[in-house]
Length: 105
Image (cartoon, rainbow, N blue to C red; front, side):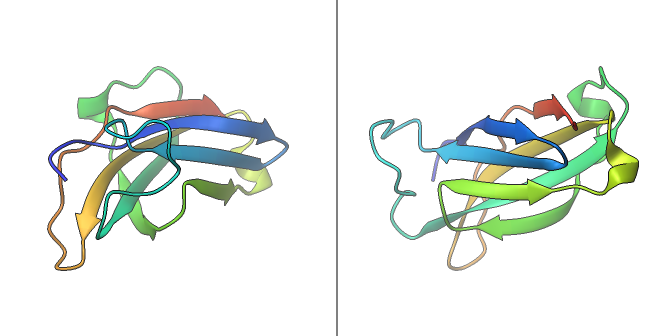
């Protein structure tokens, strides 16, 4: 895809968050663009980091519009940061989204 997915935290409870991933080109559907999945990278650390200073890693491929992410107790009170991009079946990646963050409860 030639654009990045849009994401938001749909639900945040004790050591569990649900992330909602949407295609901004088709905001009324839950579907990914045809032939695309989403690469989701994450970092857990201090609050207030700006994108150039966030060492994103732990990439995982997501194929559904809702993704549950669980955390360990040691991460409570820290901030989780994510970024997202579309990836096609040949591994080509589109542009990255802006960072999404929330506090781990």
